[in-house]
Length: 402
Image (cartoon, rainbow, N blue to C red; front, top):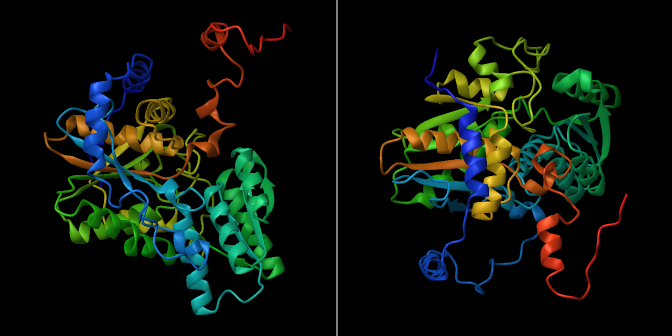
């Protein structure tokens, strides 16, 4: 079945980048008005406290806030809210997935006390699984393909996990097959994040209700998301359709890896894992999105026709929008968050006036320091910063000549 697709031009990304460099801070009177208006919107008064102390870190998963995007980025006459999943304890939406898998496996007895937990991941799931294993006392092994950011490897090792890096040539299917081999050989518990129903069901029970409950009396016209495993799309999307059938779901994927748009299905092994790499896959910069196969969890949502529109993200748009969110909104999200917000902005441009949209921001920008997201951000002072430093006489750190 074909869905309407928003044809994307690089002009959109260039436009966002241009608006960032041209941004001028509003006058102080406008800032005061904004602050006064926002003060009335706090759910809790500052100083009131979080609530009762938590028994362990897993209790901090979920109930992430939605933040309104200003008219510096949001098209006039529309409202976009960002669902900020980096408020989870390990700073990504995958904290929900890891908690769901571990708790489900403990409940059904497939995970035994002291058993090693293993999973293949682009990083965020591995970090979340390592967190849960550290908290519950399970040894943890992660397989991760070579191209993903080194920060993620270090974070997992900081949490006590062993990280097995697989060759770049093997892509996502390579790290998945390596995890399966190791689990079979050593008798370890394999998370199966791409296949397990615990994945999408947790989003049905938490992420979807959070969005609908927080909006209360507001009508949700569009919900925008991308996909990695497809758990958020499948679970939260199903809940939203069940409880707000008029909401249109917009699903985004990289233009360079147009797997869904190709119409070609992934061939599967008996356990639902992919047999081979998808023929429509090509390398793309949106880490955590669109592996080189269509996950079984994602396929389950697609078969229910949960999506109303598909959006292809062009090269450069995700990074430009993530940078725009940081510089204009103070929202520090990763490349996938930039991609989702770009899709939301493009959708808003075509949406009827008064439309309300929610876009998922899966993780924090701090997870991308060694990636193209920060390639243009220098550690050393530039000429403008040096000029400011030299405007007073003391403590000037002059650059050392090469």
